[in-house]
Length: 563
Image 1 (cartoon, rainbow, N blue to C red):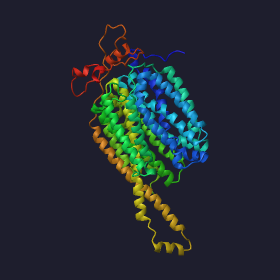
Image 2 (cartoon, rainbow, N blue to C red; image 1 turned 90 degrees about the vertical axis):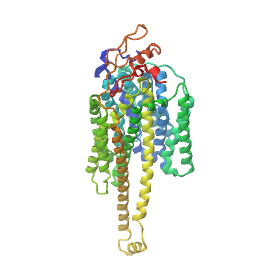
Image 3 (cartoon, one colour; image 1 turned 180 degrees about the vertical axis):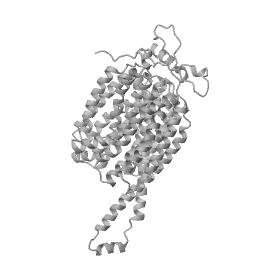
Image 4 (cartoon, rainbow, N blue to C red; image 1 turned 60 degrees about the vertical axis):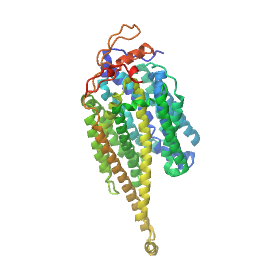
């Protein structure tokens, strides 16, 4: 078989046809990986019915997947450098399809949990590798439109998961929740082999074993404490031990990464303020995204008695709004930059979330759809400009490091955010029930002596349960809206104006180096780790800020500036 084609170092790379089709193919990998974070949740009752076990045991199907994603993400950038981005993407997508098939064939609960871990290993690699490849094949002045396409997999997949999963569980079999990934993965891998440009290895670095061990345990411990804190008790010794040891391990990881010659994740990238700012804003957006994505379906199912598929249909319009808006926002980003898109988008998102703070038992389904769509409109405007501006500010040689940090931030923010909201919701619901549901002796005597018995009292408690559920979730949405307003203020610190086009490197006499590019072309990608690296260093010079002239230092090749 022939090798995947190599991207030509010509101006044709600047046309959408040169990068649009490869990017559309690569989004498949992101989509299936993110989809599996939500599609399986609706299958939990059916899996419990088939395999038995307690609900906390069955929920390990989701917990194991999330924990493994968090552990694998930091090593993804090293894998891309060591074996080549194209090759790692192809192998990861095939491995994900194989892991999904194994999950569908599982014969008991423990085997299914083990297979979910195997499935999550390539699932954690795919988003990082895809995001890094975006910055290798797309010209800098077209990166906004490309990131709009990439964002479809990030935000549409979680919303589509409950709908698709609910339909498959309700009308077919829960095993199809896993088997559906197999044909998608195989076709996506074939398409990737045929159309995705081959991006060769970077300079091979030694694997940072100490860094991996500390970050893997730190993320595992913190994410496990966040996911099990409500079940085990937040003040219990297991949760406290995990939080303390995990935090210490992550602190040790930072110290190690600052000292070793070849860090697994170069934390020095956090010195780039535009990237750090975008990371903070992305964290706030992730909390907003997951808070609504989790609690609105819970309210519709527990409070309204809807099936998972029916609840998913009501949350689907917001996914369509975000999916339609992201490519448009990406093209606008290329023209005006991220500042006003992000600030306006976050403001609209905060307003939509504030409207959801008016949730009551009498709120209609139509109102919920409208509120979530208003919020989704703002999120569709803001998310990709925020992520893109941060990555664009990082030297090209560190894009894979920044991409990994973006994904780690999303995983940690999502898990800790949901855990914190669960604590607040549980505490408030307990207090509300205590205040409103006191059964006085007179009330009990009246119910016992009436002909209707306790039936009216039971109805009263049912309505009270719905009131408490709505009130506690409404307060969470108001808190989330306030956090999003802070993000809108932070967005004013982002860059204003379009990014400067990729500049052409000076001609070189070295015959091992590919010819220089015309201005605005995408970076060439070659297999040789020597001459090819020199080409990338020349073509990936950091772009000067539009607010100040370039300095001599800013024109140094990345290879010299990153240390």
